[in-house]
Length: 183
Image (cartoon, rainbow, N blue to C red; front, side, top):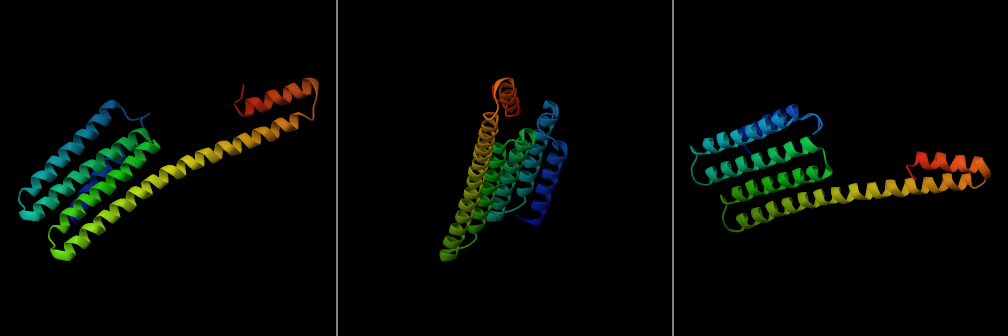
């Protein structure tokens, strides 16, 4: 990305982040709609700026604009929901945007340089997608591990209650069940 385009993307992202500093609980529908409209308007402005360019420079410019729009929309969705699923979609959108721009830039090259450039761009996208997938799996593994730890703690506490009898045992079990959200 050129410095100007990177700066514009930073401004868009900063605007979206400022608008959506909290998650969906505090973002009104009107704020969300306004942010989405700003993203679309910025894309149209960026695309119009590409009209002055020629040949592949124009293609690169258009691809940068598309990428910025896609990333900004994904970022808006993530900031709105705060969900891990949206964070992963954001990472994928960034990977796709970077790949699209890199692929267009490769068109300026020829022969083996062009082939290598294309392979490097694709490798970067595959790596970024793999990182997003790995992040998803790590998050799921952490969630499973936390549940396993909680279950183990529950069993230990219930076992401690077994040393008691009568009302004391019933009270102990009730307290443990309440602590661990069991019925």
